[in-house]
Amino acid sequence: MIYEAMKIHKEDFGHIPLHQQALAWGVRDEVIDGSVKPRPSNDVELKLIKMK
Image 1 (cartoon, rainbow, N blue to C red):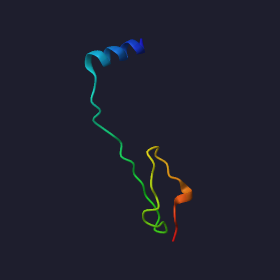
Image 2 (tube, rainbow, N blue to C red):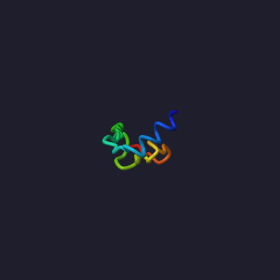
Image 3 (spheres, rainbow, N blue to C red):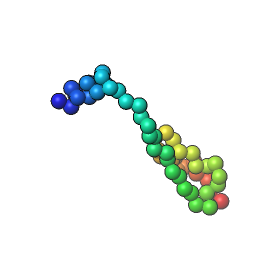
């Protein structure tokens, strides 16, 4: 039934996403600017972060 409902929705109505959640990041003052680069998967490779 869920498959059928989704099929009807896709064929007859469709939708336009109106919201995309922004990622919020915060770092301590000891972290060197530019060393934290979040990836599309919403994580950070910790071995690349540089500290003062």
